[in-house]
Image (cartoon, rainbow, N blue to C red):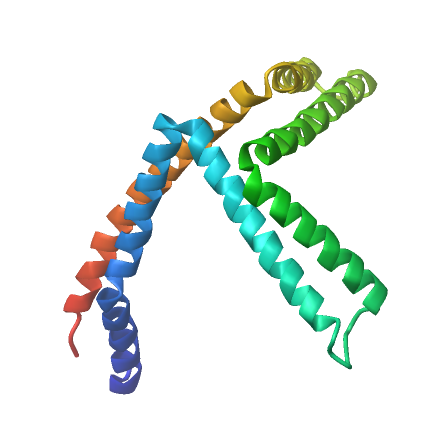
Length: 191
């Protein structure tokens, strides 16, 4: 490796090493969010839904403003429909985030039930061609059961789902923190 190539690699590693704090910040935020989600799942779900509503509202307003542009890449009719739907969804979500999160969870429940039925039918159809088809059918039954539980108790389902998301966020955060300190060592590379 020539001196110029070596300097390029060392420069990149050193630059990465100086940015270690970004990974640390992501990790700390991940752990913080995860702890909130695990300890206060309904509040965390409401906060996530609220953030989604703010994004939808902002996108709707930008789309509404785009209607006044002379050159729009899509028909103004579709753009107007999209803007209105985004604004309405955004407002409903911002003013009642728990209800929105519960409704989204009901969509998830419907999908789980349909997916479960599909898996069972699939397992029956391929039972002569593969081994262990009962595992596919079992996953279908579990998906249906989870979907039904979400329908019967959306707030409880919302809490459980948010706890799982929180646990994943904690793991993600811890891994980011570990990575940050490993990347920090790269700052020690000199030419």
